[in-house]
Image (cartoon, rainbow, N blue to C red; front, side, top):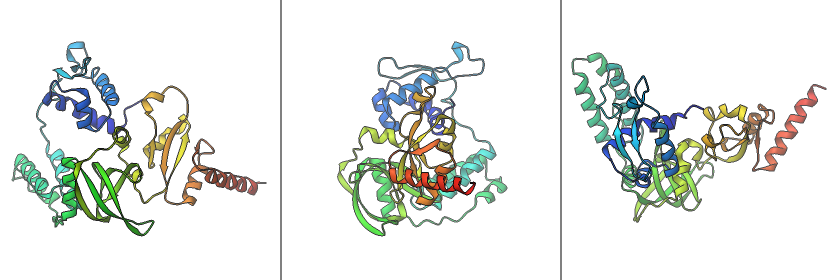
Amino acid sequence: MNPRPDRFSRLLSLVPYFAKHNGIGIDQAARDLGITPKQLTKDLELLFVCGLPGYFPHQLIDLQFEHGYVDVIFTAGMDRPLRLTSTEAATMLVALHALLGMPGAVDHDAARRAIAKIEQAVGSSDTTLRSAVAQPDLDADNPTYATIRDAVTSRRALRIRYYSATRDDVGERVVDPIGLQTMDNHTYLEAWCRSSEGVRLFRFDRVDDARQLDEAAAPPPEAHAHSQSAVLSENPDLPSVEIEIDPDELWVLDYYLIEPLEPLEERADTGAPVHARLVYGSPDWLTRFLLGFGGRVRVVSDPSISSTVGSAAAAARARYT
């Protein structure tokens, strides 16, 4: 089974991280990286068999972590400074300018400094590259956004006033920040919501007010493991159901807002259905979605939805008789 994209990105960053923090404990590293010690150990075991072409023992990444601390013996060149081609630099500049136009996504002064450094590195004579990424900076940084970003960085709890679009009301929540997510030109705070007792995503432009509390953010350990999917399935404005997915239909995880509720690596060869959480926009859409799988994807948390799907399937069959 191939690694999921989020894990692949994490694996690429692990060697430079441990080269910089040689000798760090696995528990501390897991907290820094936002994953569980169990998942980090699995990642290290996978890195242990990666390396340079040829893949002989002396060409593989060498990490020692048997005693709870990680020591880097051989990095296979993954700690060397990154050198960007013009195409890669243009891609990064376009992405940075896009983030500048996304409310609250980044510290705009830091982003502008990064843009200046990349432009200097590729050379001021490359006017084509400069004109390709020349976009206006639309940000007048909102103090609320800055408070949220600072709370994520300093790991402080937040009290927020949040507008829920589906309930059309504003309520107060105390949350423990985990990180930031961006999607569809919006920035979201990923946090453990103490009132909901779960990980949620809060859209920046729906936060009326944010105040840091005089206490450290303390999301429970399961919150970090839960946040690995990093998808908008945690939007508190949308309903969700628990589903079972037969092994032949696991491709849906790559195309819909579906979050596995169990590690996929541990169930790759069992043949058992995978339990997951599906976010949906309306009951009609959910019914059509489930009908398309003929029972191979099914709801297990809401009998009324299962009954609706069964009635719709019976009505469809009746049309053919």
